[in-house]
Image 1 (cartoon, rainbow, N blue to C red):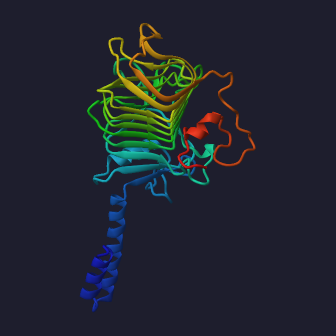
Image 2 (cartoon, one colour; image 1 turned 45 degrees about the vertical axis):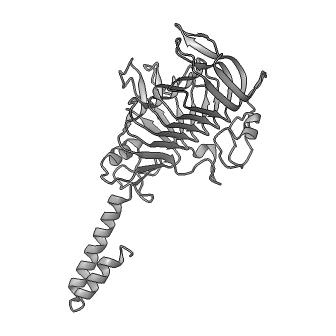
Image 3 (cartoon, rainbow, N blue to C red; image 1 turned 135 degrees about the vertical axis):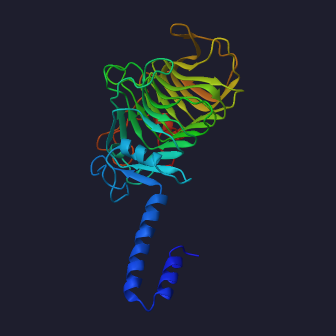
Length: 353
């Protein structure tokens, strides 16, 4: 039965002889329904250009900052996951944001939408100083402190604070938390001006990296404790100047498929005592000098005898990236591309457009 029919049927039947009372109850019912909808509809819209943090967070009255949206999400009492939808614009983080309940943080306009363009990606940039002392002083953009958290269609840039040496846009510290998905996101670092130490630094099982681009991050991915059922698919890792990935696997539960790794000296950093049997499938390595490395005051070559490469192509080429014409229309306008990526389905776009 339609929920709206219940109070109205009861109201108009019981109060037919009292029109003024009927009007009052009608108005009260409408107010209660509206309030109930606001409490149960756990979607928050944010627009840094047109929003205000004094508004309600609806699509027509969006908030202005991600800080306010995260705080509002923490106050929801419903069991359904929260969705925070970001309109195009720049989101500046002055402090780390902590996600304490299942949530999706995603662009209003996703890369496969027909009207998507690079400029319409919401951009998250931290200017915070060091805000975490876990293992060593560093800066975190968003701390995942809940299970089943998703990121979709967002661009993350480096931390421009001159006091920060190590910056991680997405971090998950608790290895007991299950489920994290990063999809169709772009991580753009600048080694000298706004570096990204690693796009994602996380622990725990059931994490997925899909259709992402890691561009000039020192390391793309750092996954260490209790790493199980971990997947990296349809992703481009370009220009990592330490290693593309550091992953300590549990029982080799790992999927690596349809990826491109380019202009990286080291592909995979493994523990010195470890020799994981790991399979890499249907991928392309361009200008990758070493498959495996160990950390000894820097990454040094290590044995890759236990690595299994199935349908992995390798190539050396002078120019990996191809500049996109500025006048090019469509969803790739303004983005440099790797020509081979389109044939493999690697990159931001899931649909064949």
